[in-house]
Image 1 (tube, rainbow, N blue to C red):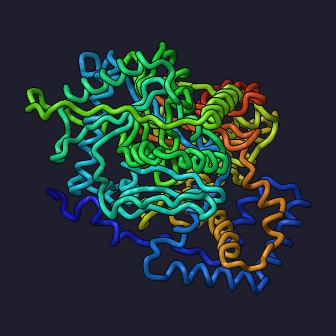
Image 2 (tube, rainbow, N blue to C red):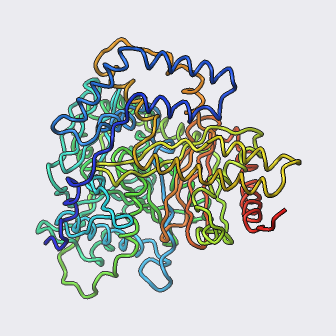
Image 3 (cartoon, one colour):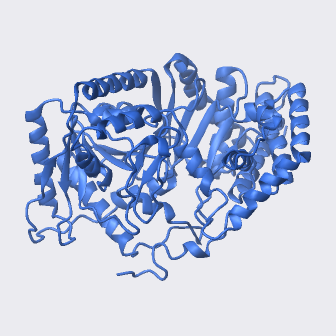
Length: 613
């Protein structure tokens, strides 16, 4: 029964809409944002392209079309189609490139799963089912930030959500009417999810490369008891041990999207394979029971990010991954879920009360192998996909860095925004490790808007350039460096607030380009080929934060051949960072990690020194 004033999703309709900027404001901001990265000649070329863009009548035509779309019945945000194109339109692999992970804190000593794989898995499953029940009956209060309600729309995509590959664009199968069909070229139509909560009663359990459907909810709609779920997990693990390696069909989901779409069509061309695929795609979520030593935190992070592709189905929204020693984490698919939503889900799961003991038995939980009929060609395809992804994983370097003597409380004691401080430290470390200032992305949550997701913030400001130059200028005084630091922090906070308000240029310009394409308008302005557009979006650092006291590390892959993916947890007493980059430039990542500690110490020391020179 709903016990909240408005229900879990009841605040959504009252949230303000994401404002649509004017084309003029967006052009001004775009020039301001890209200018610090450009030479004078490049800036002049970009100004000319922007001037032509402003006076082009098609610009106004396309913007008016976007405004009409934003005002139409059934539209939640002018970004509705943008998100579908951005996430479902990418054609590279989502495994490692787009999916993200969290490494959980270890279970407290003496609690279920503190040193036992089955116990920890059961604990996660039962807590996740309790969360689903709360969403289904809307008894979970809407999230809020500083007293302001946040959009809960993404929580509808937590369970029984599966990305579906397409040739030119993917689709997604999800409950609550959120399903999106892939492009017609992908072949077999994909059934839509229910127009309401998922009615599925099973999860997908991987033990090695063997997959099993495990019923966790009875036909009466009641969750199985922890003991019954534990018995089912042990049955699946024992069966996998006797079966050997397993089919590993999930490796196909590690392929680039069009290649996976063709493999999926080939899979479905074999009689009977629609049944196991239906089981996979409708499962509430996945649980992977990892074998072998758990390793260090850094090694666990790598397995959470990539792992054995035969024991994953990367298209599933949620996969809990549990190691033999009871440590655990989660791998999330991005198309309907952002990091802040997964953080809320994880926090709910990891802080849920222990299940009641002595629950009445509900009967054995069904365990059924999920097996496909594989032709020699399909078997070879699976083997090739697994080998290719393993090689790709090996070509990706990752690293964890932990600062136990720095956290948000330390930054606040220095009278500086904690996020601004670490972003400035990133810039100093990058400049000193690579010798230049490069484009930097930071994800800014906008869930205070109706169906809000994120905004793209470009971190480099003129004030940041001044700061990093001052710090390496032997003629700059400490007072001048300190003033530059304060100015850079203020500029960062101001830009973040602009992004939170929806006043940012990149997604608007990108969506105008996409609107023209969707409507078949012959429009290809030079702005999209200008030095400013190219350099501002060519990330050398791609950064995102996920604050949760229940998480050790958060991570994702790099976004280009020279990018360092920087995922960070800035908590009151600690600062943990996960880095990733192509192995070919891993030396630069190692240098960046070393310089980061130096930058934190130097900036802290500068702010502590209040003597007048």
